[in-house]
Length: 218
Image (cartoon, rainbow, N blue to C red; front, top):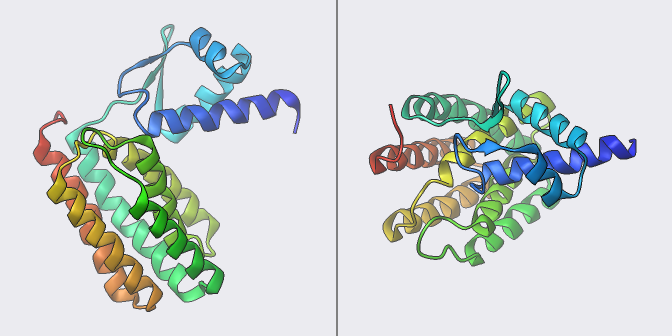
């Protein structure tokens, strides 16, 4: 990989993380010069990174005006959740069939990390969101179909943007902790049906809670 491509990839990964976890909010303008200064990369590398994020659906290119973070809406949240349930369930079933002891160990490790990562008392912190992503990634990591995992990764990134809008509420957080524990137990017991039911309910509850919060437009 050339130095230019390497810099662009570095910029892409950092900007993707910043958009996913709420450093840049929906509709924020992504100005190239400040990003170059922050990431210590060239304008070309930033433009290439932003173009990739457009392809991911995380950023929107406005003609003659540059780039903004993609908007969010209640309708998109509903549609996103519907598709995520299907894809997450498929990947989870395949992972349960194929997973080995190393896979099981990665789930146990990532769940422990998530459980031990504090959430604070306002918006979910980046550290918790990263641990949350790592936990959910570990559950499906043994799925052998790379295409399904790519689709799943793209949808998961979109969903994490919505999750970053959540205010921390004790009852919701405790409920999510219980889901994560029950989901891990079902997966490690190789109970595909129960694991998929828990996953479906977990994703739907997260969407419903955000919709009830009133932070999304129509």
